[in-house]
Image (cartoon, rainbow, N blue to C red; front, side):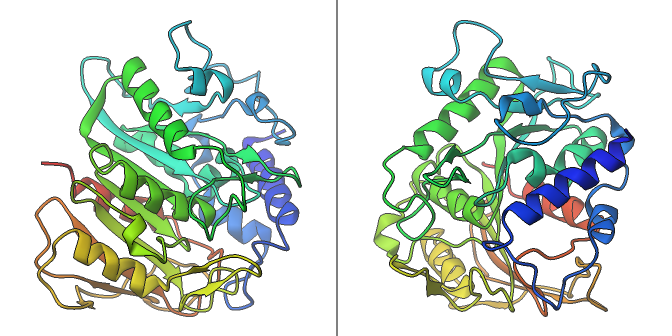
Length: 345
């Protein structure tokens, strides 16, 4: 079975299993083949995750590809943090990695019902890591009462009464990667979708001394900004489709849960917390073409001016897109380039 076909089956499984939670809006819906064209181009880079660590993930672990570049980071030695020992994760190690040359770390945080592996296929970050030489950590959330994987991020999304401390767990994941590999401490980043976007905001609030920057696609910050208390500036990029029916661009609430803020308000709160001098969101350059199913440069860029050199508060609005845009090959490159421009001082 080809890697491309495995990728297709994985993505079909992921989309069908979470169809009620993450529907594809009609404006950016396309065939699954088109989605694979967007996320799996260049899949011969040789990156295969150890899916055996994730129960029922539905992925062939790829025993015939032993040099895949994926490491079970939770089962290497007895010195591992207990949180990591209980919840192992994968690390994509690029072919150009050298132990004497510290490289950036990107932690990928999946959406509700998804897995680290399917989220990585969607973003394409492990593939990009092979050419740009950075580490990718792929942790998975716990399973809820319906056996769906989630992050206990904010009161709005998506622990729904659970008490597990995913801030502590993800901090342990980052520390574990630092212990095992040469990580540039100025360039530790998070990239999350939906529930993973909420979790990215949460970790930026609680571990701003550790995290240099985040990208949150369709996942927002706390509605109660008093719960977000960073001690250091963090570069924050919020990306959101303005037709998102799941996490509304203008904010909203899940039935029976506290509200979440709008995409604009999430960025405004970070503009204030990063001590940016700008008084509001303003255009920061030309529009971008990041989505394959929408014509032209559909993504509008705005941000706060006067932010510290190592910080930012930006909003990229994908006009006409829903919750799961069919992103182009340029998407991962754009995100990573943006993150690299905002290291810690």
